[in-house]
Length: 404
Ligand SMILES: Cc1ncc(COP(=O)(O)O)c(C=O)c1O
Image 1 (cartoon, rainbow, N blue to C red):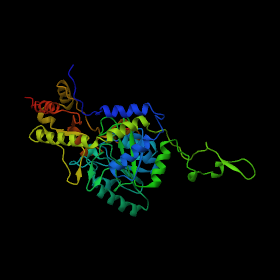
Image 2: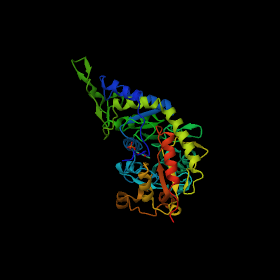
Image 3: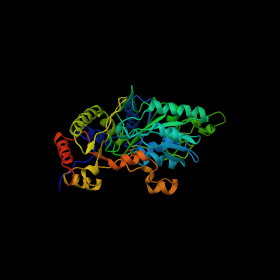
Image 4: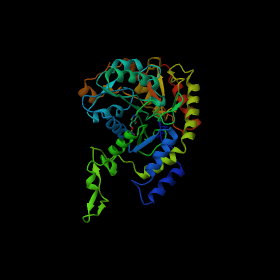
């Protein structure tokens, strides 16, 4: 069996292991102090005003949509070039995802397509920062503001930044919510840092933070200021003396158990300390890939927008399979034989049977997405990769010569 170089994976060292063990030996393995510590560390790194950590990026997207009040009859515009979770979160709330085609240079949602799809039913937009490169947030916000004026209601901007921890847009850090109401990230093992499973919603709005925290934990609050029946807090001991009921809480909304554990947060805190190191390593590997493949006839390298600094979650090449004379499945198999795992990011979400059946979408809905999809293939990129691994990837791809 050949040892496979995966397309992405976590980098865990002894510090991370020690941090997790420390929590395992402590009093609280969940609902302890590590959660808030992780949230504060995330705010420091991203310059976000508030953070609510949860147990996956999908849970983060779900509570963000709930906090935005998405419900039946609402439309939410998102990209088809994403993992299904970016659209599923809208469906969980009873809303309708609307797919706007991508820009063929950045592979991110196209501004013109947003303008075509936005209408009086649009309640939110979820731009996805594909592979780590931010969407054009300033112009997305301008479109949203103009539409809010036209239709007379708030349209939320929820950034799906699951690929973009450590990335920048103009002068801002992704996650800071300078151009949005909320930003969501994931800490799945292939992402920039990991907590095993995990996610976060950042926001710049205290009221949204309150709602997000409530949805994270069953819709329950223990804050007396938020109680509906505040008279229930006290128990009469005698005619003049009342004592506070220490157990009293209220469930005000239908929430979920999306809590992240202290074990996961300890890993996250330890991993965050290495974000700069991971970022530098990814950048060096990306620069090298650019160099290796800029002269390769069978592939095109990813475009980098001047307004952005991407922390490359993925390195996606566009392959000219016609030129090579082989199908993508065959190329993936040949690379696998040479010890290299590749992956397709993404199948257009609107072509999934669930969306076709329930929302009437189909192939040909977004032509740019399909042009991109036919040729895309992500090759290995993660901070623990060695130069030798990278050489192996380079020479395997160069060896895919046109078949005669
Ligand atoms: C763009 C995007 N959004 C959302 C998610 C969902 O995150 P998680 O796997 O943490 O639930 C992912 C995960 O792969 C993703 O890539």
